[in-house]
Image (tube, rainbow, N blue to C red; front, top):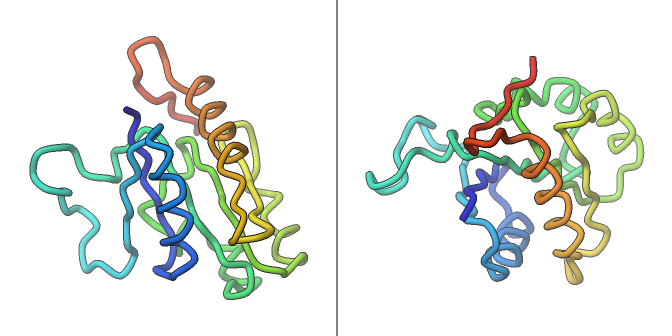
Length: 147
């Protein structure tokens, strides 16, 4: 089962999203909290740390972000590695901030907007993850690094 690191500020909404995706048992989601004093911690000592996961999800609440915070996503949400495949899961109702994410989007950084947190389209999210997974891993299942 492919591991997915989930980044973003701790919130009830993020927990709901993670719970919905975990219920499908297609990917092993590992929540990475940004409030930890060190992000180099091992999950339980038996597997590699979350920041080495092959796929990444960054959950953003557009209502809580600012123009400046979106302009500095790579710094604000470290250790999310934007040189590897990332799915930006956004929710909230701020269209200006949604447009501001466009410069980040490319072949290995995708955007999925959750319009209704009560009816999360998990099939669409899985499709995005499957697409990222199938296109950006070599035949040894190692990630292709984009610079």
